[in-house]
Each structure stands twice: as structure tokens, then as C-alpha cells.
Image (tube, rainbow, N blue to C red; front, side):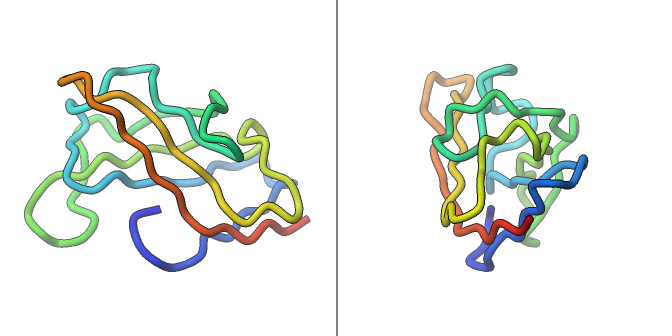
Amino acid sequence: MSGTEKVLLDRMATGRVRAEVLAIGAGGFVGGTLTFGATGKERSLAFCNPNGEDVNGDGRLDLVCHFTTGDTGLKRGDRQAALRGRTVQDGLIEGSAEVLIVN
């Protein structure tokens, strides 16, 4: 979800979809507040990488989380997925990405 490329999501897969929040390290969000899916309110969080990861090569840690595909509420025909959460400074994280749903 960090770039402009479309996220390919297989609804029938039992795996997870990865989402990235740039420039917010793993300790920068309130645990349990991250939601991801069709509306951004789906409680599909599986886990976040505890140490963060420099996804875009800018030298800053980014938040990398994985969400359970079957819990996202995404269905064939959906064109966008949304991510929401709260930072430790009580700020709101909101983002969306274009998705292509298969199966």
C-alpha cells in the first residue's frame, strides 16, 4: 500500500496481504488500532514486523503489517482497500490503495 502499483488480492487464498505505512516505525502506532479492508474498519490485522523496515530506502523505519486476507471483507469488484489506525501521539493513520480482486 505504500506505492502506486495495484495490490493483487486473491480472496480464496488463506494467506495474508502486506501493507506498509511509510515513515512510521513499529513503535509509532497504538497496538490493536490498525484495521484494513473494504471500508478500513475490518479487524484483519495478523501481525506487524516488530522492528519496522526501511521499505523505500529513505533511511527511516516504516511500519510493515500483515493482514489476514479472508478477514478484509474485500470482494470481487472492489477497487480500493483502506487502512486505518492511531499513532502514539493520538494522530490518525489513514490510507488507501487500488486493488485487483481475483477469485
